[in-house]
Amino acid sequence: MSENDKKRELIIESAMRRFSHFGIQKTTMNEIADDIAVTQPSLYYYFPDKTSLIVAVIEKISNEYFEELEKKLKDIICLKEVFYKIIAFRKGFVERYFMLHLTDPSSDAIIRENCSGILNNSRRKETDIVAGFIKSSVNRGELSNVDPEKMSALFLDSLTGLSMWIIARSEKKLYPGTEQLQDVEIRQQELADIFLRGLKYKGTNPISV
Amino acid sequence: MSENDKKRELIIESAMRRFSHFGIQKTTMNEIADDIAVTQPSLYYYFPDKTSLIVAVIEKISNEYFEELEKKLKDIICLKEVFYKIIAFRKGFVERYFMLHLTDPSSDAIIRENCSGILNNSRRKETDIVAGFIKSSVNRGELSNVDPEKMSALFLDSLTGLSMWIIARSEKKLYPGTEQLQDVEIRQQELADIFLRGLKYKGTNPISV
DNA sequence: TTTTTGACCAACTTATTAAAAAAGTCAAAT
DNA sequence: ATTTGACTTTTTTAATAAGTTGGTCAAAAA
Image (cartoon, rainbow over all chains, first blue to last red; front, side):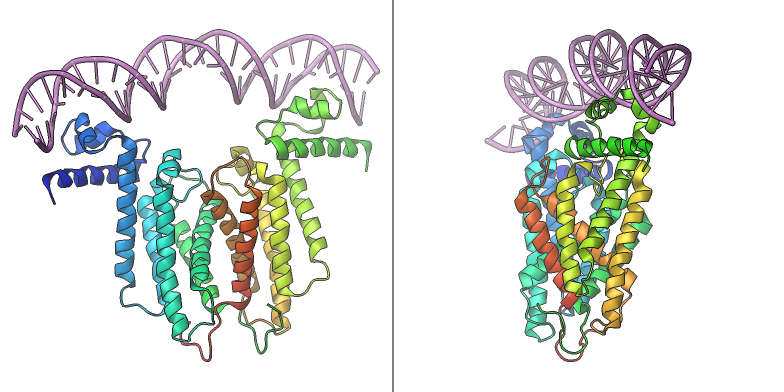
């Protein structure tokens, strides 16, 4: 890694810290420059504008997400364990990066407009990962013959939606409280259980599908 | 119904029309007064302030919701049919009252602050209704022994969350488009199917619960 | 050549205020 | 009991001035 790249990283890391603590709007290029003891114009040597720095940060966060997630899921095959690990991991991620409002409809327009591609890719990637586990489970004969991609997307979107809705319903605060996040995790686990077990029919299926 | 009550109703109906078309903020008491050909002070004879009119409107909408919903669900016992009817009904409801942003975290503060009780009650009531159907289904031996209240709340919250998330992910417009609402319905139906059938295990359950 | 910086400008926010519009009141009329 | 004209108060909106931030550039430093 060249000196140049190192400095770039330093800038991104400082921006990441400030963005995730104060939010993007409340972070100035000068503050980031001060953090790493250079003047503000130096930043513009590495990033043409603030937007591209934001994009770089979101990209790094996305990479970090999958790096850590894949580490967590390594050597796991049990689908229930996979689901629960993802839920727990997402909780930690929300705690860390809530201020970025990455899944929030009322997020900064700048994120929606410049990072939708990254976020869409992330969603697709996570869907693919979970789909892989579902597929394995199907192949092992544990699950009925379902469309892994579709089920995966439905599961993950339902998790995200459930989280959004629970947090939206709670008193609007700057950060979701510990109990709220706890509640989100529990309800998401319940939903995971439904996905795994469903409302099992006894005997033959009385409801035509 | 007294003359007084009739006029009250007239006011509420006009407010309902304007609120659901233009939104609460963009509707003035004068416009409502004009609609029913009285002067603005007359409204204040029936409602002490705008807030109480808003509350009355939300209350009426909530009542209308359950009245129509219970009509739709009358004589239905098949749980799948119940789920699908609710999903279709909610779609129509979102179309009609989207401008009120009743489930939106970025909704008018006035709604959050004054109508949270009504909205919480509505949520509880709908949960109870669905729980009743689930209970019946359990009693008929169609479903395994689940907690109907819990399952009902989980199902409905997941539906709402999924809807929020799909609409949030789409291009932010004034109104969600027809295709988006269509997509929401389809995904919600898929989720309903999961709740009904789950990812069925073949043979004995290999995943400990 | 690569990187950094002081000095600068332009674009965007925030604060302030004035004007307009809305909410809300009340005594008198119906 | 209900409605209204005339009114006051509160809230929004519009305009604009002051300050901040994003962004540029030629020259200096490494």
